[in-house]
Image 1 (cartoon, rainbow, N blue to C red):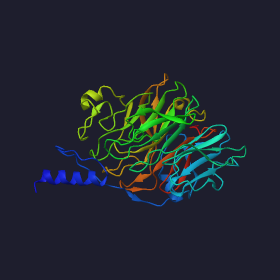
Image 2: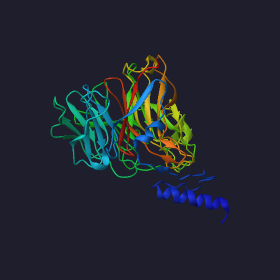
Image 3: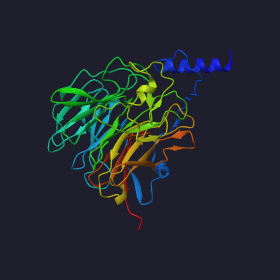
Image 4: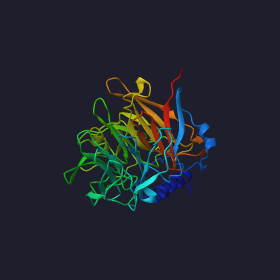
Length: 394
């Protein structure tokens, strides 16, 4: 068999294995890497491998939490964390103010795949693959019986970890990822952001392959999200995206990525037009992150404990790649915004989970700003939550 045919066959097999549509003619197929770094169990000796900017410190806030994912914090500093694999939401409290949580307490149990979380003054909202619930929140941090507020969400397929957020307008925003790598979705509620209000829901934005993390800029009120690009396009394409998410906007997937770049490997055309015609109508990414780094959570920094130039910036957890060699992600980055609230670029903030090129002891996932201005970063690989604080440079 000729080398180019072998490559095409290998790509076809990879696409089918990932549940993807296969183009009738692929042309020159990209070089596809399947690579996962060796997993290393966390112990305290590994903490010294972590690197943060001058003046910052890192300590273990909580450990042995399993596959901990989304983090949210109440005004009193109580942290709620979802553990999808266990079907639980746990509560973490630093009662004595030493920067370390007391033992975790389960407050929600028996909700398989629970992922997205959001808080208001009186309720904890949480989302499974098919349902969004609201649980009344007591003054002591306890939770009452959850009630379903949105049911029958599309499930199955590749992405079953919904994102959830409470907007400044008081409405709940819910993201549901695509069912596949690249396909024509059967449900209009896949690869979208929805708004939930008064028992109904409507599509807010489309073409978002898998935007689990999103937040509102504390100054401008603009909504930003971090989206995961398609796989099996080679080591360096497509970029992961940071998008300014607007009502009615389409963000390109599965036909367009990044700055309105047409994905030539997508076999179909958008309804009623060519890919190039469609690209001109889509919302371009405002920042591009490294391919396959897999952003999970995005949070703006609203605290006052970090240096002043951090206020109004955002942070994103990069979970890490499985189809790139050398691997990407396995770190935590800062998104820089101008004084006017416009995105300008990104830089590494917390690194070191990946070492020796192919060994890793953490995959950053959850992220939250605490009332004291410190940050918590959750690792769903070894079940550790890290606390990042600013101690000053004097």
